[in-house]
Length: 172
Image 1: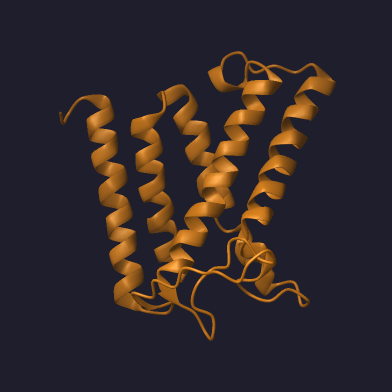
Image 2: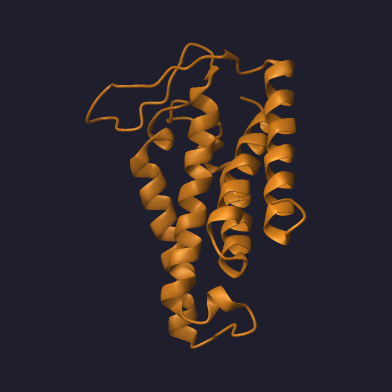
């Protein structure tokens, strides 16, 4: 899947988060989600990693979410800095939770995008590799499909827009 498609899937997830979580927490979760959803594709830049390999497993999502959230929350606790003007960052525990959820959702939205496309030689994402070779190859279209990527992008804008309208009371 190309950038536009991944951004669209992430925006769909962001719209769901906006509806399900209080705004004070939803906005930093969404910001984190949108900034980390691209991380699994760093495997393109690391020669010894296969694309849609270890970087596309649940283990990578858990480790990276914990590392990012733990680093920031630990840094806040160590330096005794608090951002009381921003509700989610009042304490290190809340900071950890918000950043962990955002990062984990970023990875999972990326995986969802890859699962629905046919890659070059790989079809699904083996979330639980190396424990199992099970994958979910939905394969609606090829990763480079202009139509597919544009549909997901427009769908993401629509879901995020409708969610915003519901949240602020314009709809429903």
